[in-house]
Length: 112
Length: 117
Figure 1 (cartoon, each protein chain N blue to C red):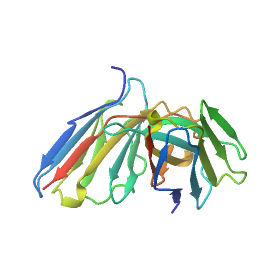
Figure 2: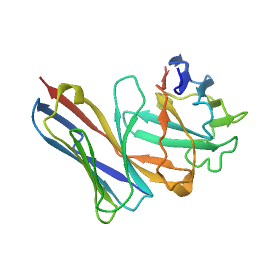
Figure 3: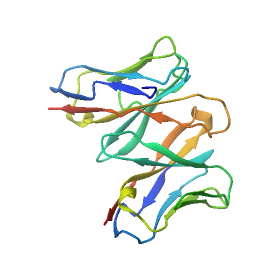
């Protein structure tokens, strides 16, 4: 069974602070995706990383994929209240129709 | 709108009753996925369809759960003899499966919140 562990589970910070969320896998997936989910809505894809060592930036968000393709991180610079939400990493299994295996999620609250 | 829609948005039922949850995917998307999100288990995969076929049903929690997809479009997830542990948010997602090695985007609907009393 492939598992994804996310940490921390909860994070409460002040506006302007930096933070990092970690996602560690017990095995290698076809790719790894990061999602953000707001209350009452489904998850929305932020980024897909495929290649070991890959770094992708999305405004103040930086996503890294480990060289062994088993761990990933999401770093937010100068967090804003609008960044509040549930962040989920998910491993993609191409051989199973791109089935997603989700981590437990990190619930982020950014206080003004 | 052109997104994934799900109905009903909320469903309250009594233990032992059957429920049907509906998903309307984005037009033209060949792949459709069902997931369940609960406090204790997080977000877990249930089943996926490629066209009208479900190649792997092993993610369904028990034989009380079934799903079908007709016409390569609408899908229905049915839970028979509901139990309290079935209470969760049931999410549907669709994508255009292009076989590009896991790079496709899954677009999620808002979910159906099921409460079994």
